[in-house]
Image 1 (tube, helix red, strand yellow):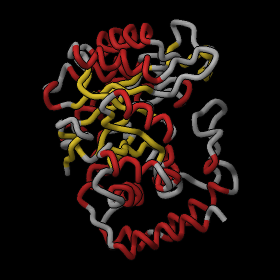
Image 2 (cartoon, rainbow, N blue to C red; image 1 turned 180 degrees about the vertical axis):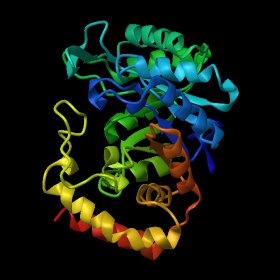
Image 3 (cartoon, one colour; image 1 turned 135 degrees about the vertical axis):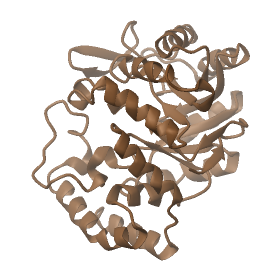
Image 4 (spheres, rainbow, N blue to C red; image 1 turned 90 degrees about the vertical axis):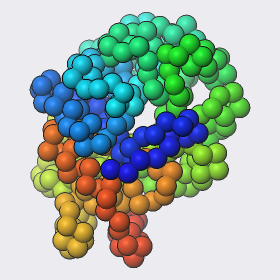
Length: 328
């Protein structure tokens, strides 16, 4: 496993992190894995050298954090760079956002709410500090909070030792520039995979300029890039995949055909389709970090191999060119 500095924080993180949205289960994931399987997956990730474990309260109403907390009891806490988030709540009013099952989620980033959230997360995680604390989504009207006010609370938490570094997810370029004006921003998350390359236009260049780690989430497009999805598959009603572009009939079949054409590359690099797709991202630059969403120990083994694969420039370009034709 390769390692890199988290922004300018001095914290060393694995080039690949483990995302635990699906591990949290719930309606968005049609139930998800068993709790024991989820815990075993987290433990296996750490054993494989993946030291960054990413969770959030909004992943099944705290269930993901609780599962990560149970896994932490069986791992040396010092071996884990723990990431969680704030700004998505269900137990107090904010701007109505998403509904999961019959429960409403709200966006809220007031200083008071952020400080309540960190205490709730620490309790669920069973730890006394969070290594990287991120805003999950920007706040929006009618409960909009100016970024400097939110960041003020985050800076306070950093001074108190409850968090070690600050990050932001799903933020625009102007919003990132606001963060940089009032805090040390060490990581920004953005959706990035061979199908979704929008971050290359402006987010990646900005991160390079300011030495911010750009963490790619959804690197396998929620499982579509695993090569295991059949053309007849349709997401169940309410499934998180259902409203995504590449999962729509017509698009999904073309992606599957493209993956079949990549089988010779898998033979060349002695890897599976998902490992190849992960390696493609990890070969895009030193500042790029990868967040994978394994839900079983054997998936962790497969994903971790991607960190050691060096794809030639010609093959990287070939994969990009084939993916770009799907947009036409």
